[in-house]
Amino acid sequence: MKIGVFCNRAASRFAAVQDALLSIFRKRGIGCEVYERVEQVGDVDVLVVLGGDGTILKVAIEAGRRGIDLLGINAGNLGFLTQFEGEQVGEAAELLLHPYETELRSVLEVQVGAERYFALNDALFQRHYTAEADNNVISVTAEIDGKKVDEFIGDGIIVSTPTGSTAYSLSAGGSILTPDLSAFILTPVCAHSLHNRPIVYNDSCVMRVRRGQETNALSLYCDGRYVCDPPAEAPILLRKADFSVRFVKPKGGNFFDKLLFKLNKWSR
Image: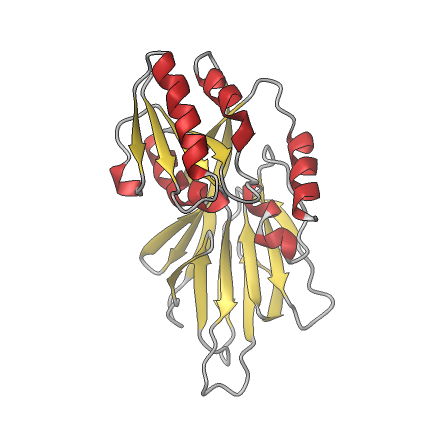
């Protein structure tokens, strides 16, 4: 098995976690490559990611496309996507030295005209602030399989995978989805109508986002990174991608134990 290590050198505990991990692999006679940029990642079977959620999101789509397993060790702050904390580096390394289980996480594909973008967590359509505009809220209408869902007026909307349901969508009032659900969630951001509420829908459906005629410019972010300002005339379609991201997990791992731990840590 070929192992790679992807590092976020800006993470607070990066150096100590990496040193401990590489020391364990050396003692076991296992070589591994260390990468700092996505384009450096070589032909490996599993990629150990040292950092927080942002570091995992940076490499997750490329790993999913190439069929590389991911194992996250939290060397950052919260780390919802990581399986182990920094002080558990020995357990993480030991897991890779034996047959392990994996968990598939769905990916969201966003098509804007002829361009396609991908997100493990979420796609955000957000108002674009301009000095000239009299009103900076946006109006977008969501359709699922050709049927109108609602018109959302406010700061924007989030379309999230189950993985991303514990990220921005949760902060905006969305529900938590367990990773095994075949569903996405549509969450309005600071809606101007009290009847706008998060909507969970089957991920086999295709969502179309239409902007109101009077809507100012809006921006699209995937996994927290700006990708484009969709042209007014461009069709916007969201669907489940034809590939997944595969995470390594401990045998008998309990999502709810991990969730409770992270939520308690987050609320301190």
